[in-house]
Length: 448
Image (cartoon, rainbow, N blue to C red):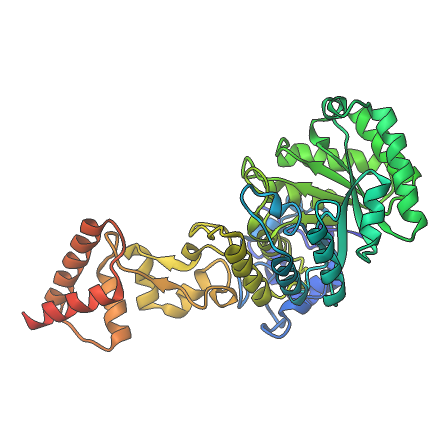
């Protein structure tokens, strides 16, 4: 069912006490029909605002009428993880059969709705890995990725999957490389989709590079998929070619062409993958294709964890993902892909809850509870707690904060001397001052 955010109470520009500021989670559940099960055990739903509560503080302007009236999310939203297929297409990444099973089982524990387990025609090991995943997962729906060829469908069925993605280009130039054209390719796709459906397979038809194709080609391909009784159609931004506004426009156009539920698959070459995905979902798409840590070809796919948090914090839509298990999946994928998580990565980067600037640290020293409230979301979800580090940008309150943690008292002159030495040491090493180094500085200053 398509649910519009326009049904929320209006927040007017001149309203000194807007109704939306008092909208609590119980009321939100009734409006969105999305029960916040994922956080139910960790937060009280009584008298907590949609944008500010015990676990996050975002902007009330996300819920003003002018913003809400253009959003048409279809709930519940499904997350389709592509880490094991598109993610492994990251140059240099190779997942073994055992690796794939470990990742899939962790995603299954995290309650990720769907897992694209791989492409069975790539190798026998990939085919066996998919069989392992089907056998050992209990929650996630397992998909195989196929070209529009019957032998690919046969290979998928040999893995015991009940769902497939069937890909074919919709861009004329790509089809020309394959020696075909839109009309012929759409006819061929119909035959393969019908073949899969005749065997009871759930089919997502995936005409890729759609954001650079003309609307006539897109219409021909999408209607072919619908005529062949595909279950879903994917709108695919293969090369990160669309702006969020352009992608939203295309999703709406495809919805006018066909009546099947839509899915969105975006990439991140211009750092707009999450924004494009949210725009597509807001335009009415049912599912989003994502990968753990955003790994994938070029600049990567859309990060699963970023979409989960953005939907929850900015739109009030809970996808019911276990955040602790998702964090475990992130660390596992980082380890097995040999791709470290950048410290400045959204959601899971170490620096999200790391403070060096003395101006920022002042509130953690003076009013720690308020400082916690001022964070975007609860550090305990991923980081445990905000980390106060020492370095060139530290201030007096940074020193006082660490002294208090250690149960050490110092006078103002000593604190100033410690701060000067911390700054000097940080500049010398061009890095942060370690806890051991700070202990040495404290000891030296207190002895003088």
